[in-house]
Length: 446
Image (cartoon, rainbow, N blue to C red):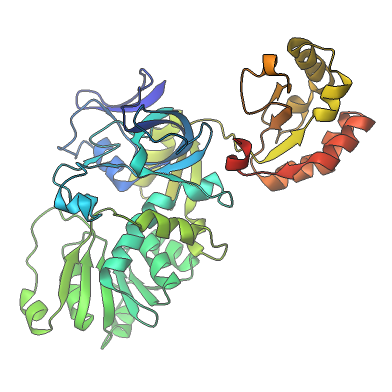
């Protein structure tokens, strides 16, 4: 399989490596999309000393189930199910793991940094860290689950509630995700940023943005104090700025990494009884919160994706634009062909009509009458045929049905309501139009 491998000797390189075999408690997934994160950028620049190379990068990923390990509970995951991966492997038995705070486990390893990750065609993930993607969420929305789980964890840590004011330093991807989650919680959100491109992007999301370097903007903050503050810029001066603009008894969350130790006004932290806390990744329940947010059509965070690129272009069109400061928020890497199973067309009537044919003869007939579909209609991704005869039932549970693949239900409807059905002939068009239904992956596997 193709994979983006970090090697201390050669930096980062797209290589051909073996497909991993899932361990007893793992599930092998075929990766559909993976997101580029700041930690991937650090690795690309050679700044991650913790990485033991070679390792496949990429910890934000979604895909489809291929093969469960032998200790994965039976019927927990089914082949073809869409899943989002939580890229954590922890010990499972320490106090933190038992309480659901596995992000604090001293043995925790991150898939995509410590273990092979999602910038590859296949990845093995512990089954306990896989979450099924609800039918209503498209792949290019579900891929945002990981960064919004980070943001959901941060917002929950501060205790931010409806009517509070949140101050966020830094309008990078994490700053924007936290802003979206805080806004959804009912808070007033103010972001500080000095980069003109990021200021423009944040304002495009509808956020109130202050440039501390602008005298007029700075004056607007005189006397201002937030209930909770999120330091997400990593700028050395940001902590004292936040402490100056946080209410007594307020909460300051540090989510950025600083290059050097800080000299911070701890005197005010004590006198104002401020809560100073950190945040690392996510823990039990955060992915569920993120997924629930992404299911809302009104949730502003669904607009985060700037570009979708191919794996082969990840350096030139992914890492490089981010490093150059191009006006991007989130760049997503398409790993494998999208194959969302959205519709099911029963062909039982055709099977009865042609019941004297063998499976090969029937397949040949179907391909003859429908051969041009996947060539002339851009939304049609492929099809498979299985006849409801036990002796031909080599690939259950498809018996008696034809399955086709589209990117969305709307595209499927459009195809079948226009020329696609008509091209199958009068009988075929009528039978297709009358038989089309939307099914869930669970229904499909029954």
